[in-house]
Length: 418
Image (tube, rainbow, N blue to C red; front, side, top):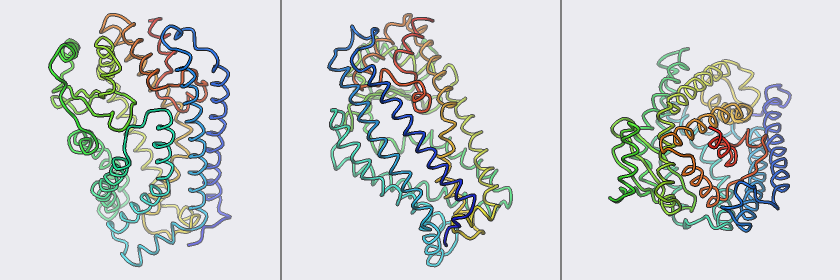
């Protein structure tokens, strides 16, 4: 139950965590300096649509988020290294095994328990972000009761949904032998597709209220857009996003005839009809360009690779020994893989973000073609960046690692160029 501090596996794991933290710190510092160099002057393209006070507030918000994020990253890295080096995880595993056995359900409970402990440790950081940072800049609209109720609901969902899923994945070892990783990948992929269908109906309503868009010119205009784009949607719904935040968004959920268009109530308040039409055209553009199936296939391929790596690690006794576990059960391998995968996935984020930004440009171009002009979407993007205090001048390296969407000025340039 004591980690092997001389193990190259443990040393490499700690090094990866530290390296990721150091890279995030460097990127944060780089972005802060870049933003500060542009803090005194509004970008020329936005001089007619944003005043000095709002621009300075957006700079302050960007810097404040960076400072909060820096502390969160340091806390997360220190917590993870401490947990790995102290042997707390194998001791907890031994306690669970001794008191509850090593059945699939018991080991699933062990995994959920560790997840809950990490969630509990991060609660003060999440609370601070909501009731200090977001409150400071006027975005927070949630109450303490709602915030804590959301966390309680999340825990219940983990127990009701994730616990049986983990038990199934662990039980596959008994049912399928050495092919468990293929079956595990198939089950997880099927589960993800199922949740895409069920989540809008069963899970999202637990957190937000959805109501139909009232009859009127806006509804007729949006439905006409969807019909003209051959985008079938069962209904247009308004989500009470303002119950928790003044940030705004739009998305669609479901498949086929059950597809729904969802607009935040804050979005309705911030944009006019032409701008809302352009935003919806952008979302439809993702559908028409088949971005969602492409990303789902990429996710499935990544998941398959992950399960194969997990299969290799589960068969490597030195992997267990390095962290103080005894080989023989899959649960510790699942746990360690989940805890360490983020330190590796971080380095691939620029590739995924580059693909995501490519999709955003394509959806923007589609929206421009669909509504017949670039200006409605440009106007909507400007308002959304203004209302959300978006970072207008991110450093390219920082945005490469952290931004799945192009910065506002980059999107405007592309829309005006096409």
